[in-house]
Image (cartoon, rainbow, N blue to C red):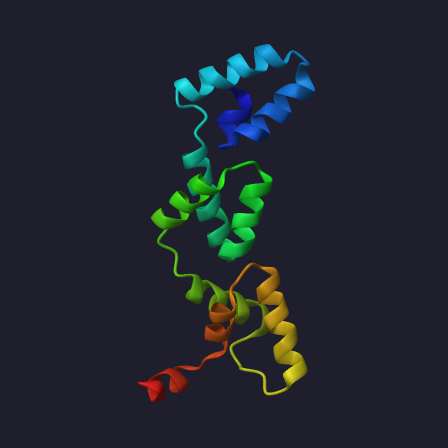
Length: 143
């Protein structure tokens, strides 16, 4: 209960933490079942909280999805959680680029490539990365 009182965890995380404390797998599964029944342990809620937390720290969808998979969350739960998320990933990519490198769009290909790799390592798609380099004048002229 102390572990879950600090933050939400995935079932895999709780199982791993309990296994370190006690090797009795049968007892661990009973505890996990009870935690799920009382809604103290909820994969969907964990995924939603995790996505919101990482999005607020300006990580992209690809990285967040990969981290959730590593934490043992199944693909269906991840998909449902992302469908319910209202984050503008394009604006997050732009905000991250501006925070890290400034608002000026680089003219040097090497500098732009470095910035693109940085955004890609944070889990943003190619379209989101390209959007982060667009200027307001460019978007107005396009329409």
